[in-house]
Image 1 (cartoon, rainbow, N blue to C red):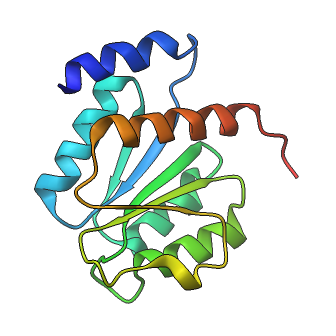
Image 2 (image 1 turned 135 degrees about the vertical axis):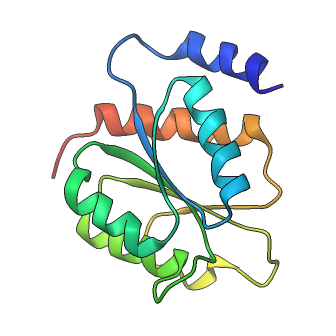
Length: 143
């Protein structure tokens, strides 16, 4: 399934530099699956197991990252919603996709631009959103 989706999505991506997606997920298997799916589709993937690690990566490579794809529940002192708020203030051009398998995790109080997709998510849904976000990042004017 991923291969078929990968082929379709890579056919619509213009040649050039790969969009960079930062995947923030503490569960190794889920992080691996998301990263594999994205790499097979033509994205460059950076992985982080905590929001704190994601912020360290963004401090180093924030100008390269198009999208942060993060679980809401991450270990450490910063969760996914707080990570999204920090990114929205510090790196406003980065698009944010949050996900959670817990029905009580609702982004109703999220005051920045982020998209929430509940788990279990489907690969085509995620890839379509990420393709659009990467296109927006590539063509967005810096403010």
